[in-house]
Amino acid sequence: MLEFAERTITVRIDTAACGACEAKACVLACETYSRGILRLSDGLPSVEHLTPSEVVRKGTECLACEYECRVRGKGALSIEVPVEGLDAYRAAQAAALAHDRLAGEGVSDGHPD
Amino acid sequence: MARLLEFQGKGLLRKAGLPVPRGRNASSPGEAEAIAAEIGRPVAVKAQLHAGGRGKAGAIRFAASPAEAHEAASALLGTEIKGFAIDSVLVEERLDIDRELYVGIIIDSARTGRRPLLMFSRDGGVDIESVPDESIHRLHISPQGGLEVYQVVDLLVGAKVPDELLVPLATICSRLARAHQEYDCFALEINPLVLTRQGELVCADCKMQIDNAAVFRHPEMGIEVARDFGHEPTPLDLIGWGIEKADLRGSGFVMDMGYDGVSPDYIGFHPIGGGSAMMAMDALNQVRLKPANYADTSGNPVGSKIYRVAKVVLSQPNIQGYLLGGFMMANQEQWHHAHAVVKVLREVLPEKPGLPCVLLVCGNKEEESLAILREGLADCVGATRVEIYGRDRVTDTLFIAGRMRALVEEYQAELKGGDRARVR
Image (cartoon, rainbow over all chains, first blue to last red; front, side, top):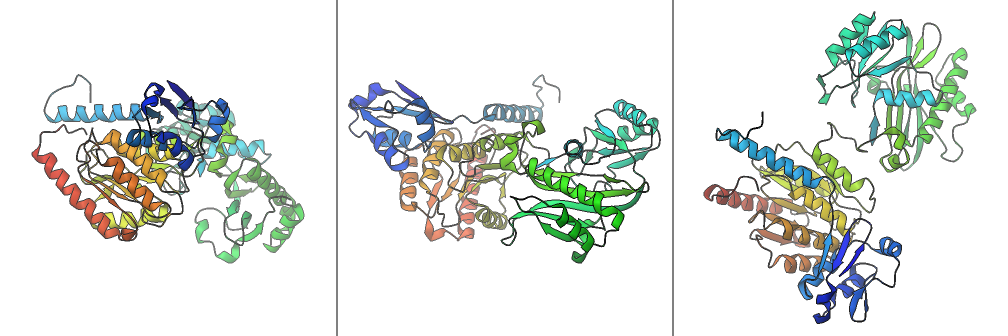
């Protein structure tokens, strides 16, 4: 497993799947859409040629490698893009709507209005 | 622009050596009463909110005694004025006004300006906007050299300011210019600048707006959201600000439009560029659809930022569709939008199957972008109402809005006929 951080995202590559990948589309995508921080090393995608701070500085968070890996590769690459506060917002919205629905059906959810 | 409340601005003016009335902020009637007692004179009790016209709105009251200050604060605290909840009042000495002046410094963004602009008028106070243009005296300030005292004196002489006020007024203008620069202000206005019957000049009000891009340099200001909303920031606004606050790689703007989460005919709105957004809104109005939010991803934002905006837009409950509206031939590389939107829709559409999505992307790397959208969504679970358009529809807002409307009606009929959960 290769995991590295760019400025606001985390990229994870299950390199065990990459050996069987002929396309190596993630590396080509990185050259095309970003600054080529992903390179092949012993046939596997790697950022070893850069320091972690160089990865952060040079990475453009274009998300293209994930797309290309899924479409033309082995679906071995995932990118985590956190959105601050979104999980709490979604939970609150869902709870409020569920509460309204129960209230509309005349059922109490145990919480005061 | 990030706006400071009056009491915050006056605190900074005081530090900059400018004369402000004695007083402090209070969050309870008891505190207001205690401050009035400390001052030991009649006071003004002023509701703190991010809006002008407070006098006419009843947000400023006068009190002759601490007990009256208590009463005034009780009447203001906990109320809502101009859409803002009042949770604090500024209690300060009431000034014995002889004359009201105006002085302000803004950033003049006109082609011929592009510098700070000092404005002075002998006719300050309420309705400053209706003061005739010839009564406003203007002076550009050199960003390098700052404001020279002789320049201000020249301006004030031109404004026919009495001799005895020239030096004190020039001093105030000079200090104001330094404060404007030091605090990275977009606008710093004192209206009114009061001349008391005792002959003193006092900053009776303060409107201070900080350049959004400079807020990070001023943690001491405690600005939570560096945006100029017409309302208190909602949870959605705060999430939107979180996308931008430390990431200036292009615009990634999201703002709440007051959607209640249940009303029909609201869609997730993701325009690309401000002008494009206005065109799209006009068209949506014509087909009786409403934007649940405002957004903008322009200025060549990175894919992660576009992803965040689209994810937030699509996370609003019960929206009836999603419009990616690039009604312009954009110079930015649109393929970053394509990658980001594919990623989001592949996450969201399985949870909201059949959600209408109309995607319009035009401009640089358009063909590649359209190909990415088509290929990336071809096998996406739930992507049964996705339509993708390019430059042949770039200004055809009514067509795009019409397609959105048609898909929304289909979707609503499906929801009505089906037994799906209401929360989607």
